[in-house]
Amino acid sequence: GYRIECGEIEAALLALYPEQLAQVSVIAQNIGNQSNADQRLVAYLVTQADQVAPSVTQMRTDLLQNLPDYMVPSAFVTLEALPLTANGKLDRKALPNPEGSESQTPYRAPTTEYETLLCNLFSELTGTPVVGVDDSFFAIGGHSLLAMRLVTTIQQSTHKELPLRLFF
Image (cartoon, rainbow, N blue to C red; front, side):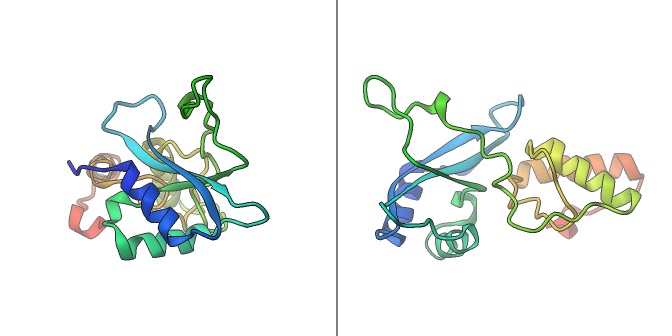
């Protein structure tokens, strides 16, 4: 229910890192084959010559100082160049999937039945192929609407009450 201006996010990233970033494109990308309500923000970055993009953790931290949390991309992908159409516009269809770039924590496999259930649900709802027990639902593309769906699914699967507030 929030209005998100991708151009504002792009401008914030370029203002924060003028020395490192040459171009930025932020898009709202559908998660898997689900409806338009299930989207995540993905930032595609092109670095200046001989520069390295800042860490994902650093970019998220810095963006949270300037933008509300719902406007911070859940994935960051560094490219050599943004793909362009013959007309010189961004070719959104040619942008790579950010799979594998969402999580910035080392993978730790689930060891219990409940950990396995949660990792599978996180994966299914966010479209992230591999989710470990230390991955944050929100950092891998989850948002408040998906969290409500997740809590409902957890309650149905476990037959235990889980208040939404506790999940957040």
